[in-house]
Every structure is written in structure tokens, then in C-alpha cells.
Image 1 (tube, one colour):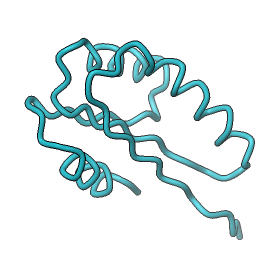
Image 2 (tube, helix red, strand yellow; image 1 turned 90 degrees about the horizontal axis):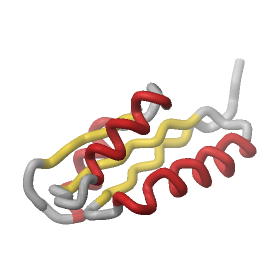
Image 3 (cartoon, rainbow, N blue to C red; image 1 turned 180 degrees about the vertical axis):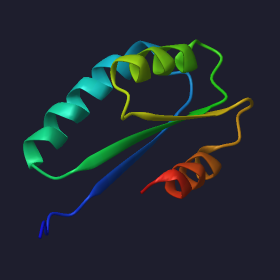
Length: 88
């Protein structure tokens, strides 16, 4: 039986298009080194800078990545709540 803790990383995003690829890369590097199963959930909180398009592209190459999109900015609390509800 595997006793390793499963990790859920929930990240609210608002107008972060320029840093998302590097953030995901660094997260995968660190989380992969822990040896625990994990999931990464990005919640786009109504970004207007193309963040959702970047996340959609990242999801194409990393199908386990979860992406939630808000059409308008609802705030960090709402974004975290949506991510926590999606977490396994």
C-alpha cells in the first residue's frame, strides 16, 4: 500500500501570461523530486492578457494539468475556492 501523501497545488492566476510556462516548469521540477503523486490546478481569474490561452496550450502538452477559467475577475478567494473544489 502506498502511504505517500497526494498533493494538490491550486494557483489563482490573473494576468500572468509571461510567467506561466516557467512557473509550471519549476513546479514540476520540485514536485517531481518529492516522489509524491500530485496535481496542479490553475484558476484563471478573468485575465485579459492571454493567460488562459497560455494555460490552454500548456494543458495540451501536460494533460494532467487542470485549468479553470472565470470569465470575469472574481478575486483570489473565489479562485482558490473553485480550485479546492476541483482538487482530488
